[in-house]
Amino acid sequence: MIGKSKLSTILWVLMGSEIIRAWYDYFLGAIALLEGFQFSVFSLLLDLSTLTGLVWVYENAPARQAKLHLDAAVGILAGAFLGSRAGFVIFRWDYFQNHLLEIIQFYTGGYSWAGMIIGWLVAALIVSRIIHQPLLVLCDYFLPLAGCLAVGIWLGCWFEGIAYGGLSTQWWAIPAVDEWGIIANRFPIQLIGAISTLFFMILLNALKGYPIWKGWLDVPGFSTAFFSSMLSVSCLLLSFLRQDPAPTWLGLRLDTCISAGFSIMGVILWGVIVIRKKRVFMNKIMQNQNTC
Image 1 (cartoon, rainbow, N blue to C red):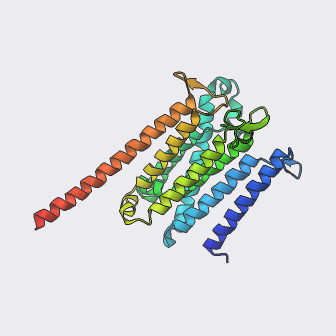
Image 2 (cartoon, rainbow, N blue to C red):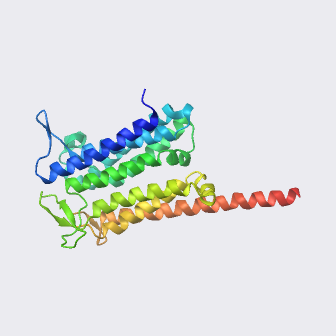
Image 3 (cartoon, helix red, strand yellow):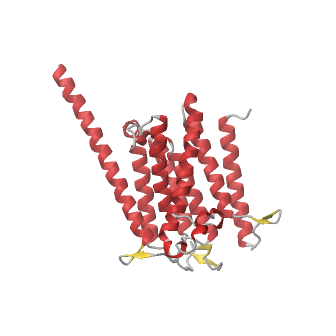
């Protein structure tokens, strides 16, 4: 039997080696072929990040609830997948209303990150009712899975010509492909997105080592509010630097508007949790004073 820690190490090594190999193959114009089928780098990264997130959830779960959390995570992933596809179809309804059969052709690609988040939340709400756990507690449990998925999606966008930055001749520019398959040095939006997401995850774990922060992080939903706020704000800032075509609303990119909306929601959730925490703390002080 392979221990949980050994399994996690193996998965992280595989993920790193596959990213390096895929990058090498891609920019040499030699995307790997496996038994005649084209190998998708985006799918590879998404699969590895999902697997890594599931292992992380399994390791962090209480011993007696590990299988339950793993099953719940798979259910939430299914909801996120359906929501992502539904979001893509809604945003491009002008096309799909005349090609209804293509809606269920998932293998052709076409997903929305905003739809994925909504699908994730709806599925989490349903799962929380089924397994009788508070929604915010459940969201905190599956935060590592969400973070790993975000990292995998950002890296996948780098290889697939999605969410790319403008052309640049600066030293920090990196080769990136656009939707027409043209490779050029560009502002590294996708790489910054992946690294910032990873940084937020590491920061969240590091803060648990400080007693003053651990008390807050133990409050249900605080970790989710913290991470979602940071991630949404970073996506909002990076959206102003994107050069890939996108629908607009009120003169702004649609993804900019959606990121702003999620940022506001995250900050509001954070504020509500902080206020409730302070109220509970003040009530305890009042009770102690009355007892004395």
